[in-house]
Image (tube, rainbow, N blue to C red; front, side):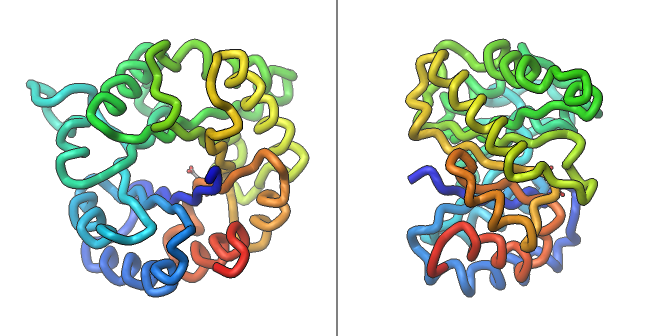
Length: 249
Ligand code: PGA
């Protein structure tokens, strides 16, 4: 059951666009009960999306969350609040949060621990920049992003990884299937070293994943699905990617 497909809507969509997009996705997805999916809408729409996805093969998730229940943290939304509106997932460590909001390993570790304690599943994003890849540092960066951040108490059954090379996000330049497979196999080997049941953990690819490159990426043995940004904003392209992950979708 490693296959999983997720939509990261980022900071997109007006309120009036949310229900029609979810309905269009559900119109087809509800006929595929075996297909496990997650939608990560902007926080403002999380409750609405979670309500719409109840009793469907899809779950709702938050793009971010603050560790804890309540507190004087103006502008933040806690992991407890996220879980309480019916969301089942939270994204942690997306490169945009690392890059623009300065989120680093100790904070990410706290988020993962607290999210899981609140009953949420964590999708942890890792990936190298272009400079790091060109310097031959891809593997050491990925290893560090795993070993420095993942808490010793992690619950591996509530955990997935998204490998998202930073140079591929929103650029239209996806990792080649070989590059993705090499990184995913490496990530799985580090998970083994860390004592994880690595064969059961979904490792998704993200970064300019589109209908025309999904099939070749999903054909790789260690690519278990995708985290889709731009192409998840239209039902047609998101569903087309899903149809390439699951036969008979
Ligand atoms: P993209 O974004 O598909 O638009 O490249 C993926 C992501 O950042 O999750």
